Amino acid sequence: MPKQIEDIELSKLDFDRENPRLVEYGNIQKKTEEELVELLCNVMAVEEIILSISKSGFFNNDPLIAIKVGDRYTVIEGNRRLAAIKVITDYKKFSAFYPSIIPEPSKELLASLTKIPVLVEQSRKDAWQFIGFKHVNGAAKWDSFAKAQYIAKVHNEFNVSLDEIALQIGDTNKIVQKLYQALMVIHQAEKNKVFDRDDIWGKRLYFSHLYTGLQYEGFREYVKLKDLSDESLEPVNKGGIENLGSVLEWLYGSKKKDQKPVIVSQNPDLRYLDAVLKNPQAISSLKANNELAYAYEISQPDDTKFADSLNEAKRALYKAQQYLSTGYKSDEPTLKLAGTVATMADELYEGMELKRKKETGADKKNRLTE
Image 1 (cartoon, rainbow, N blue to C red):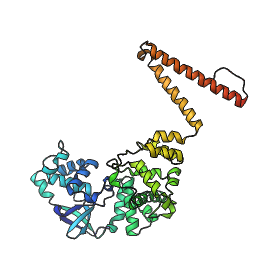
Image 2: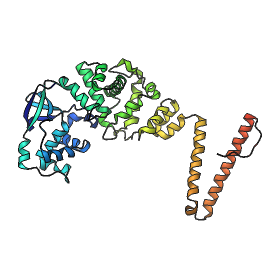
Image 3: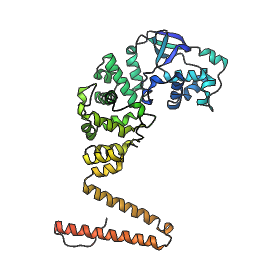
Image 4: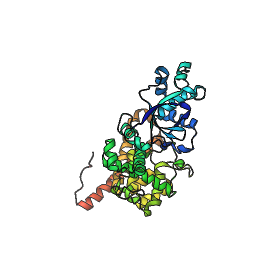
């Protein structure tokens, strides 16, 4: 664990460009310090820390954690607090991020922030257990993408088994394996140039879409995913790489192709896409027009589509009934339209009744209603 506490000059403290919470927002390596401060302020509620430090100063009993890189220090724990301090100490540059709440700092506060207490570690490896316990399932929880980044780094770079990682962070081995596999899928797609995180339609990569989707049979078979127990750096078999590129494009879209993702919400869209991936005709439709609802309809058996159509018609008629008193203006064209609907409903029922009679030998009975 930490070797020593030092008061480090603020000017020597750098943000961690490998921070698991930041990598889902694009290529962090290319961002300037000012852009990183803006990103942290926009997505990680830095304002509450700014107000706390402005009122009470920096709590010395909760130091940052950093590793020394040359004559500088990379903060591997406490990037939100570092961003808050940067905003306060460079008020003129950063106050625009929170114009209504940031108080102008006093000279005393600025003087107290020229040096910051830091726990200096020899390496990232020395701090992985503490950081994992705090952020993976502790009080300051990371989301699934940050968890996966952390798990992969500890496993791949520090040679810690996934079993041990699961034990240390208080999670099940299955969850750790699934998070690791999903991240390796992204890395494999990028390595094979069928996916580019900087090309996604939105500003943020919603990792949970992929992580959840890969638990479905249709997804796994379509991309030819290996078993979880393989814990492979390349979890997708070679024959599934091209399909993987298509899946990631449907999940996240592409700015270059001007194509939006087909997943708007995980429920029900992931289930719909899973059904599509099991049906070649539906897949062809999705590739051609990028319309998930239409492709999903194609994927369904005819009896399901027939029942769904009837239920949809019933809902539409019920809705029309609700607007009868206020929506119908006694005009003839609308009345004729209702007559056409009624005729079509009668013809459909008679056709169904005739088919049922032929197939079951049942005698004609009075119309059944629900």
